[in-house]
Image (cartoon, rainbow, N blue to C red; front, side, top):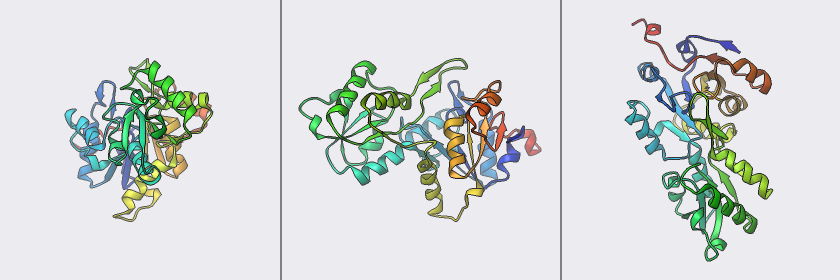
Length: 289
């Protein structure tokens, strides 16, 4: 583990950069200040980069558009690999018909809508259609009534033996410097314990997330894991997932892991990044401008 002040010196060692989204590129306040310089540098150096995110709240096109509205046009939909994409792949392969019930927003349901199945918010499941529910998906922490729909999800799973997919494994996300909010992964873990069933999880730290991105790249070019680095702000997802898949990892301190906590957290978890850097910003001075 090395503490590096100069983020450029890290990414210069690799051909492909995987970035987490929230806490690395953007925060609750908007874009991380100066992050557009990093993507300008990557474009100038013709380095490949991908946003590897647990965010299943919107489609890749919608996620890319959200960056464009903030002024970061370098991130296009083909640069985004989200856990929702793995959810869609699973449904295409394993669930052939019936209803897929979901917890989340209508935007988050994009991934299951495109699988050709009949999709339905958990709130609309009732005695007349519950027997046709063949999968339940946890997509996003918004878009539903927590009390009513979480209780309904529990009872659906008591009555139906069906696969349950957690498209975003994050347990919490920061609302501000001091506060966090419960994410859909945390909600799913609670219900999993209540119903006593094991859910299918897609997203970091699961290695399938990294294999999906890795396979996408290898469809058009040869690449080794030694040529890829994962940049993230969270030890239990970004860093653990990258480490498990055999990638070098960079922990940045602009999101879930704060500068004052980093040493304690690494010691407590045993999750050790290859590098620690204050942020993922390439400074103009580092380019000789």
